[in-house]
Image (cartoon, rainbow, N blue to C red; front, top):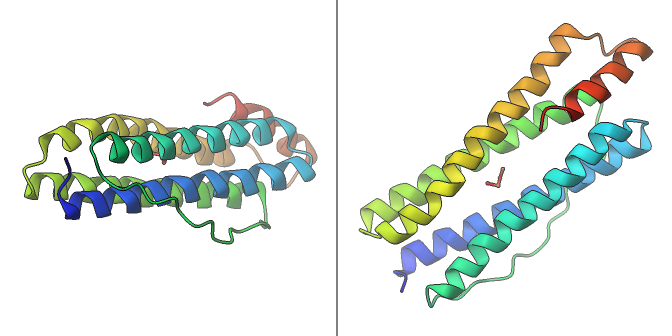
Length: 163
Ligand code: OFO
């Protein structure tokens, strides 16, 4: 079973993962309509992964006898100034998710809920990887010039190879 504080923070985490999925979906669509077919596929895949992260928490709450709350779907950003901006926002979002996961774990410790802490460790490892990938994507902008057509093409190819 879950104590109320842990159940609540897990529902917040589920919503964050669901939001992350929708944010990636909007980014993927923007990339798709601007000619970045490879990075679009990469972020469609990220959107699906975040949906799985959402479902994993959602199911865990239910499995532990709690009440999993289906999150509402807020508006997400649909337009972006550049390819680089997409990945800058992606990294910021991932950092925010990592911070939220750390808060869930702090709450688990405060409530002596070691089962949920153990469950959350999967997310810690996952975030380490996702932050690393987002940082790598941004590094590529220092190596390849986004202001030239050839650079745009290369960035699209190289970023999509990261994940
Ligand atoms: Fe990358 O957000 Fe899920 O964990």
